[in-house]
Length: 230
Image (cartoon, rainbow, N blue to C red; front, side, top):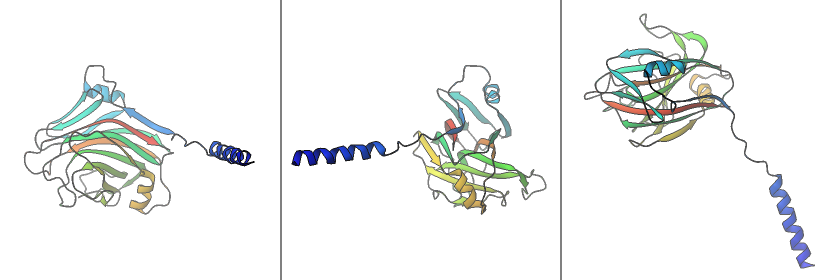
């Protein structure tokens, strides 16, 4: 009788285990990888992925290396690549990236707005004021970066785009470390801008900026993949 009871218990436990739903794999609504460089002009290769050089101040290097796109400055400079996309359904962003050299003194807390790498996410098509007659108005955006010491998840404003732009360090990085970072970008939009609905993601950008850094402005970083997850 005891054996029958034990058998019945284990049978029930087995059925219960089978009834637990398997964890679903997130749906990838956008994916770009920088691991497929096959030679030729790096800028042409990036253009084939939809990324255009929108800003260049000083000497910035965008060069493929292995599975990564490497961003590098040797002095005070800035560069921005932007791709137009249309992703209406998403909840998180996943980035595989890292930093080899941080700009000296870079810290939004200290007012030194420089970064070795930043991924910009643009939302919707409504253009908000830049705060300057010389800078075009652009849609809402959140700039995501890796940092050395700034607080994680805090939304900072910059000199311009105070109405529609926020800058957030989403992870601290050891130099040379490869990180795969997931960040709840839809929830962050609601929280940072006080909105109940999130518009489609209409653009993505990748930048390096050492214009405000201390010292000579040298920095180096890399990125291998950007994904948007539903």
